[in-house]
Length: 106
Figure 1 (tube, rainbow, N blue to C red):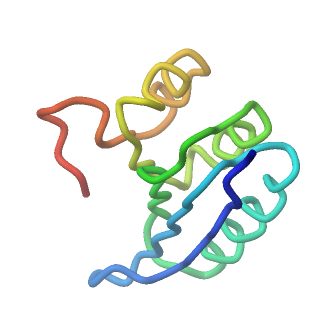
Figure 2: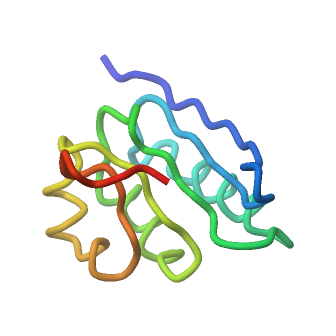
């Protein structure tokens, strides 16, 4: 049974947008992630921080959303997602926080 995806958008103290995803990201709901990311980026100062630290599953459709916006986002993840984000190349395209014990979160 899948965990529904919940998306919330906030602004950090510096005014930059923060998009938090909770649950599972797959082909059935990646459109909602894309829409939320685009809306958060629209006219916002700075890069969008996408917090995936409470995402339990991320498939290739969700990765595509992140990869297409890599030049305008930073990602917060956990060691669980680290191998997927590394193999797909996202860690080479943008900053990914939280993959190691010494990696500070933004």
